[in-house]
Image (cartoon, rainbow, N blue to C red):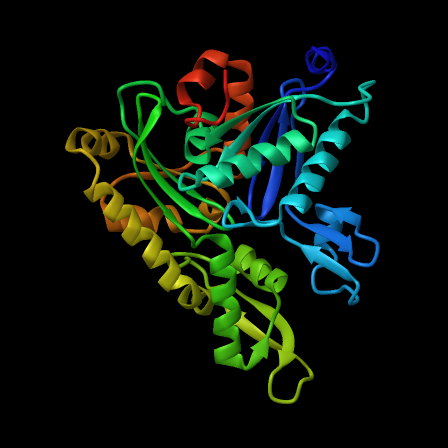
Length: 347
């Protein structure tokens, strides 16, 4: 009763709890938070020093007693307490402008397809400990399809490839459910690591994750660009330990990422092979939709289309598809009840 009363003064939230970024949606303002899933903790006092953007600036630059933690690995919670504190920080931040003393919002959270019951419970418990009065779990692929305004409840197949930070989810959706799917533990972060490895082997230079991500965003591509691109690369020389700068080209970055991209495409083909033929016919007609940050990699849609012989398009604003989908579900309880993840909430 008390929770329901507090709930009347709280804003319901849609949350995309991602490996790389956490996005939060409110029905009245849309996307209000889009910050890295990173928390800085003072290990001496167990105090949270920074969350999100401020914490990401500290990565690789902290003294011994300050630890920068990424509480989600491959889309699932690896550090429960830090995830809870991060969620509480974001919920309190959203309600700081209102008169709500104790926020008790309803929350819809996106979860990976291959999540276990234990991991589901961890997500629910973290959200409830952070202040949520009711938690609904929805598969991220379904949320991304809803956010991309695809007809998920109809008897038509929709194939969605959601390339996030920690996982790539390939799903065929029909009649409000996932028919066939594959989850890969390779996505944006794996591409960054492949660039780090390539630079180490090719130039004898050690670079950090942020430098690798910057290279991927600025000159990374899946297929050959019309005009060659290059950029300076700075890191530590592994031979003498001193700072060093070299020039890296887009073709070298493409070579570094080619193996991972090839594996993602191969798994899209495998998913198509195990999909019922009627649904494959629909996919051939309507195409494959790319969502998530990885969808922004230049030429990835063309490379997938070339390999599968199926039209491929990138969803509008692919980074926010999942959180927009959770926002649509907040306003449509009927659709939410149809697509909700099993055993996630007693309705």
